[in-house]
Image 1 (cartoon, each protein chain N blue to C red):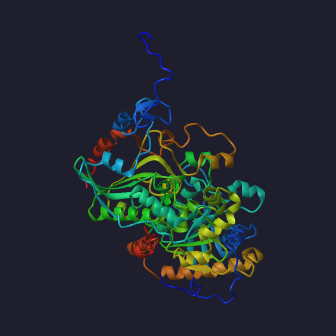
Image 2: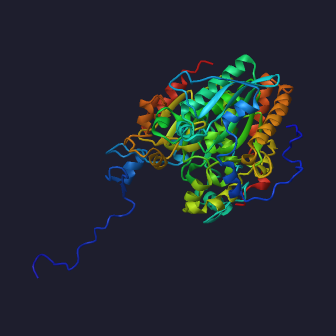
Image 3: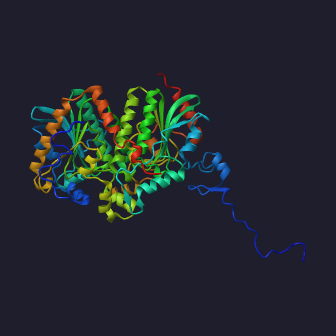
Length: 289
Length: 276
């Protein structure tokens, strides 16, 4: 993968103060961070929202629609946590139902048909753990997205903007390029969940956060993300307008690169190679038996 | 002394530990040999007990036809993970030694009534059948083998989900295995997913429920989120059959529930419908 100016490995101009993983988790969850509506309204010059999964519902926890930055048109999808209390409850605090994942897939398929790239903004603590979610196939909906996104014949750019919570995040995060905001986190399980299972003590979440290696720097080192998007000093919540502008710049740049890269079968082949390389077995790094 | 010699102590009637199996569901005492010849299914209530990957392979493929590969893949510790109980590397090495198995999945090719297939069978005893980098790599390798030789792929899931100790890289195995499955699908090859107890978390949210045909064992726990997490989130009691194979059948997510004794013949009958 070609490195770009906002590169994961390049040193930044203003190195952020060293934070613990747990402090980063708090920043990633800060309700003052820009959310889907901010990106739709302020990162994009146009956003035409499209609703519904055409099956049972319109899940407000995942939104999407036609969007444009400058002359570049694309399909924008993303988790939405909501801002007001009413919105937050309606969005189940950003935890999507199967209907949300199916709406996202419908819009991605539409993008493929119309020849539009996809930009996916990830910000969720996880897929919703609910009765209806299970009855309507939460696992199937996410698994289906993983399968279909792997074969999508249009470029997919993913930006982890806040919380990348496990399968609920990955369900819209199989991308040709995955960016991550400086203070975002992305993990297989929440630190609290991990602590309660492996430490048998939820209060050990700070230790679990450290052990899980869930910060943008960790993920860049592990080869899971391609670039880190810088945030304003102190975090995106301190200056949401500048944070959105920085994401806009990164999205425009990476979209441009993706669109001048491979397409069709070749694109799908490269995406396959990208994910196949993650966690590839290396006998030199295996646990000694 | 009369004819009866009075004994001061009652004769030892302690059951020999290896004779009886107590069904965890109905508490019936079943002769262990009878229970094992019933493939670890309770003859009284039909409860399907968990079985290991080797036992599963023995009951699915023709005797002597299984050729295992991928045994060189063993656990890795990409994060240098340690929890309250110590380093993950030690735990993983101990599990390999204890089970004599290299990872939480066994992969290879074998015949089902003479039809060559590639299969991947998860083993719940290996760290809860968790999906790790090694597990994901072995499954992806099996799918690639199926593509190379144009075989049907049969996946038998038994897993609590992604392995936390390998962090984000475990999560990425969900994408990796599905990307391999997409290639297999684009090659027009059949994929049959067999869901056994339990199939939950990240495994339910990747390859387990996207088979061309999904088959579940009776009573198997299948679901994405844990029951307790759901109960505390929605603060209501869940139905008794919630997240069982039967519940998934009723809601349209599995094609059939097949008892263990009829699994192989069902698989063979379905594979016979492949025309390309």
